Image (cartoon, rainbow, N blue to C red; front, side, top):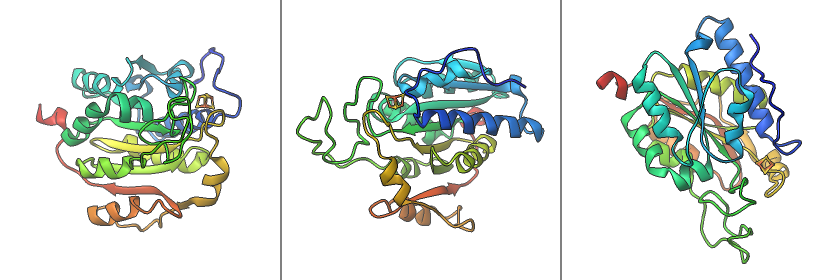
Length: 256
Ligand code: SF4
C-alpha cells in the first residue's frame, strides 16, 4: 500500500507538520494491516491553513474544504455514507477561530468523525497573526504590542460540550501521536485530538515543549469526566498529553 503521492512537500523544511503526516501514514498502515480499516473506506479531509496541505500528500480519498468548514464537510461525508471512516484535519485558525461553531456542534452531536487539530498557536499560512490559542504576549503582524488575551484550552472546551473522545499529543512524538490517532480512528463517535505543532518559522516553541510535555499515566481513569477536566487544565508548568477521556453514546448518524 503506497500512501505517499507524487506531490512535492512544500511545508517549511523541518516543520512538524511532516511528523504528523508520518504518524498518520503509520496509523493507517497499522490499522489496515490489523484488519481494522479498509483503505477504500477512509476519507482524509482538511481545512485551510498550513495543515491543509496534508491532503496533497496522502494517497487516500481526500477532500479539501473551505476555510473553517472541514468539520461540516466531514459531517456531510459521514452522513452520506456512515460506513466511511472520516478524518478531519484542521488548525487552530481553521476551527477555533473561523469555524468554531461547527466544531462545537459536531462534538455535542457525537458525529462519528475523528478531528485532528494542528495547534501551532498562530495563523501560520498568512504569516503569523494571533489566533485564540496564541499565548498572552504573542507578537505578530496583528498584535505588534503583544496579545492581551489568555489562550483558550481546546481540550477543555471539547470536554465541556460533550466530546466522547478527547486527547492531546505532541507532533514530534511520532509514535505517541500514531498511537493516539489509531485510538481516535477506532473510536465510535466524535474523537478530538489536539496536536501541539510548533511553527518553526513564525513561532518556534520546540525548546519550550521539549521541557514541559508530560505523558499522563497509562492507567489514567478515562471514563472520569471530572478527572479529565482537571487534567487538561494543568497547562501552567507541565503540559499533559495522552487520552484524557473516552465514553460511548449513540452517534449522530445512528440517531438520524
Ligand atoms: Fe510549518 Fe509554520 Fe512553515 Fe506553516 S509556516 S509550514 S506551520 S513552519
